[in-house]
Image 1 (tube, helix red, strand yellow):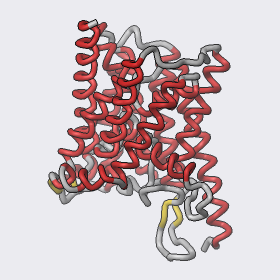
Image 2 (image 1 turned 90 degrees about the horizontal axis):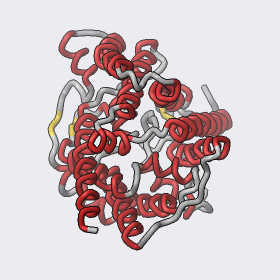
Image 3 (image 1 turned 30 degrees about the horizontal axis):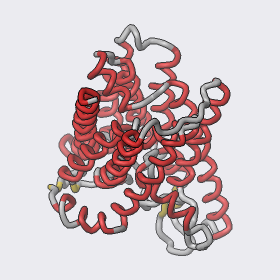
Image 4 (image 1 turned 90 degrees about the vertical axis):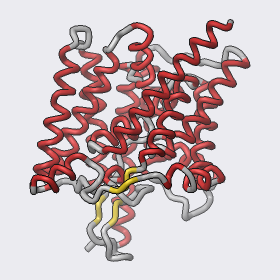
Length: 371
């Protein structure tokens, strides 16, 4: 059995591994201009589906990678927050819609905000602080009380669990690992094929975004679900996933981690306030994006254009902070990590994000028409 010194060493190794994976995410996202908000905007404004195909391929690759590792026995695919049998559908719809609307006003989602900070955007730095504050208030503050006593109360329970493979295993009597891999191949495979069907999509950059980011999500599942797993902690004698905020394995997500990052920075001298996966991944994405922007010659300082621009970005950041926590994730947390588990709640949240983003795009067009 591991002793405390071994646990501390492993904890540090897990954090460095998570940081490295998130650096790769930031590098690829900056290089490929990966952006869910941009993908939705491209479809609405230009009828262009290239960036949406990149997103679809990333989801397909991530889901197949996640359940392939489960089939091999490397990770326990049921040990995520997305696998809960309690489907908080109203929180997913309301939170997702708020997040989607906000990300349009703030020029991108949480991950895009971090990528833009790395590329020199000072207004994205403001978005980060406002979004982190709003997320913290929704996690533990006055907005948390409102959330818990309203939308979180509206839910329904599924005995088999909250993901499609759990239902399949229960309904067909299959072994969970087999059910997971089959479902991922059935749903994730067509997403990859659909992405490749686009003639404009088949370029090295787009493939890097789709395949690369999908593998990054899977890699983070491995770090938190395999590398960080301790079957018997020497103090509690219980199994534990080291360095996670949820106590379960985690992949990339950025709304709550922004709040945790602010908490860590403000309460740094508190010895009980330790680094977690969420905090180091926030830093890693910024570092990765900075590296790519600097090497690619695209690093530029950027500020707000006007008072209206400032107000829109701050309002959008607030909506993202509240919405991302309410929906249990952002376009990466629910849209990539959550969907990679084939979770019903994640699918509902993503639908809400898309609806909210469509509303945000139309709101911006209305503003332009008034000028």
